[in-house]
Structures are given as C-alpha cells and as structure tokens.
Length: 136
Image (cartoon, rainbow, N blue to C red; front, side, top):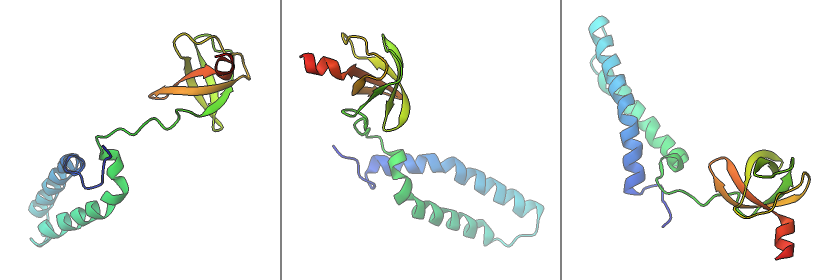
C-alpha cells in the first residue's frame, strides 16, 4: 500500500505534531495581550497566518509524517569494501562511506573487493561479496 499526501493517517500525524506549537503560540499571544496594548484581532490573525504557513508547507514535508516505510533505497546496489570485512566494517557505495555487516553465512570480503547490498538496517548495510555470487 503506497502512502499518499492526504491519507488520514499522515494528515492526522501532521496535525497532532503541530498542536504543541499552536498552544505555545496562543499562550505567548495571550501573555503579550495582557502585558502590552495589542489589538484583539492579533490573537486571531497571527494563528491564521501560522496555519496558512503549515498548509503551504505540508506538500513539501508530508513524507516525513507518513507512517508507511519505503523499501530500503540501497538494496541491490554495488560498492567497494573499504577494508577487510570479517563481520563488520565499512564499504563505499555511491561515493559514500557506510557501516556494513556481512550477511549471515557470507564469507569475509577483502579490502577493495566489490560488494552487493542485500539489506539495510537503519544506517548499516548488510552486504555480501560479489565473489560469492559468481561461485553460486
């Protein structure tokens, strides 16, 4: 199931995470009205402008609020081992250095050897050597 910008879950999460900001804004406006001589319309105009800002930004930030997790973008890519990987080490994929772990049952990978990303757990890539693919 693909997440869409206007799914009830995504919009609901966005609204719930905006509420503390609105409460703080109202509290500061009420405090300002009591301490200074502001016109009452400011109490409604400022939050309305704040709401407009959130509505305009939502199309750009909705993916951050989506509860659907996309497939790991690194799976299937190849790279190069930056060092010998016996269990854990570092690899270079797309010119970036990544922490890596060998896939269960995979033989060690030598420094400079081509690797293939099999899975991703957060910022750790699960890799195998390309040599393994050629042997099987």
